[in-house]
Image 1: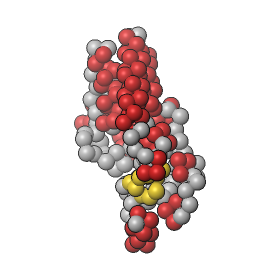
Image 2 (image 1 turned 135 degrees about the vertical axis):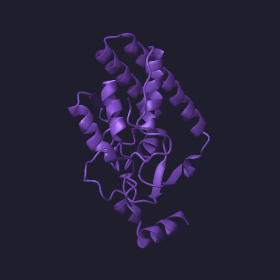
Image 3 (image 1 turned 60 degrees about the vertical axis):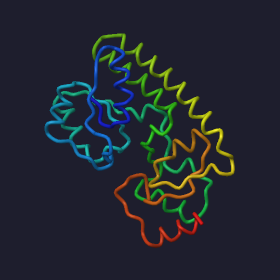
Image 4 (image 1 turned 30 degrees about the vertical axis):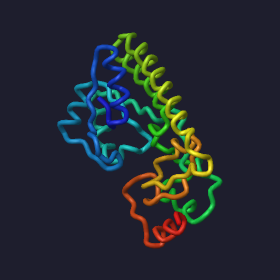
Length: 220
């Protein structure tokens, strides 16, 4: 089982290659920051025996459900901590201005950014993690081999992404985003985050009128 749709996409490719399958607790459009799991979904996680979660605080609304699954015998693997996570703010540490001061409100200094799927190369590494864990849990080495196969496929995708983005001129490689979720994208592909609408890396905050006015001026 997987907690998020992003992990489900990768894990399902690995599992199907090895003759298995995965189910995702979250569905398309669910906000991973606040979605909660039902009792049936917790039972499904326990039944699966192995649960892949993003970790680093992304699945805030599912913390208790994941804990319950662990207590009932499921192995919960948090993938993002294994993908060389970035601390919040590292991608725009040199960016000055009002937004830079407020963008990471709600996160302790040094906390790590959970939005690892924005870097395809990191998700390639995630495929290997999934394959190795499936192999360890089932005793079937083919899952590790499939993890390496999907890793190679995603590394090729990463190269294609870089080729596509190369068409964007250096002077226009800037982003204004909904919330601070594009740090890995900017670091991997050479973009600068110039502003965020919702302060912080989660979606449970609201911008103040002052912050919106400052962002509007910054965009202009």
